Image 1: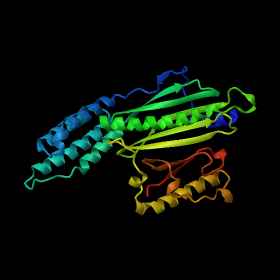
Image 2 (image 1 turned 180 degrees about the vertical axis):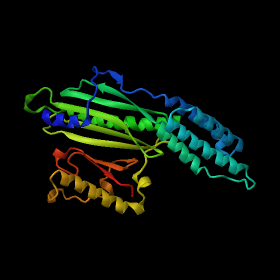
Image 3 (image 1 turned 30 degrees about the vertical axis):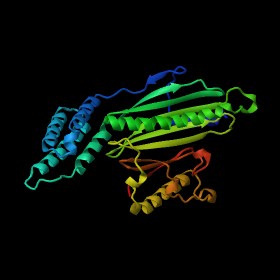
Image 4 (image 1 turned 135 degrees about the vertical axis):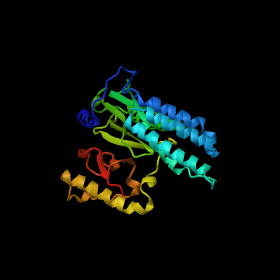
Length: 315
């Protein structure tokens, strides 16, 4: 029983041990957070004027962001700040033009979203608990910083809920007796990571390997959170793959999974000849090189494959 869970846990990579009930900081906040915090303070301070299309407020924002961009020595942050400056300056110029009237905020919102993606930073903490009938029970929690306050609050609530669900699901098996009269037979290891993401979105992946108490095989699973960098809300797949692009996306997804199975020696196995639909796509993240999709152990392949991960080209 332990062999299966150790194999699954190895897929997650090394995890830092900690004392029972202890918490250790796994990463430190990068220096770019100071520039990002100042930028969000500017937006919050001028929010009323921006909402009401006060040209003076838009000009103050553009001046603040060009200064922040010039002062930043972090290339991606400086570029993102510069894009916000350009977008806010364009709105201010439109409001001051002879035609006047309302000006579109679309480019400004998009630039702020891209800034949020660059600034977002996940701080990971390691936890280890003493759970009855478990040989090991360790997990990670994560806190996002670098976003505007309301978005960070919403995103962190979502992240915490996802971690809690994984932990509680594993703990619920502790009431079952171990096979063969053993006193400790369960195993749970869990990690949470931030991954590269497209502009306007923050990508979080949670992966766990669990050998439930009383079971003779482990289960590996992935939960992903694609979070809007301006609101902190989860992003639906339809935002990345509109209805018109869904057929080619599914065709490429099925082709990628078949290739993965063939590479593992299952190219002609009718039992695993599965046609995947939109309802089968649960864990996905929009990364620059394509849409990454994960399938839990046993979902599309035998258990020996573990978690199946494929990258679907952008439709």
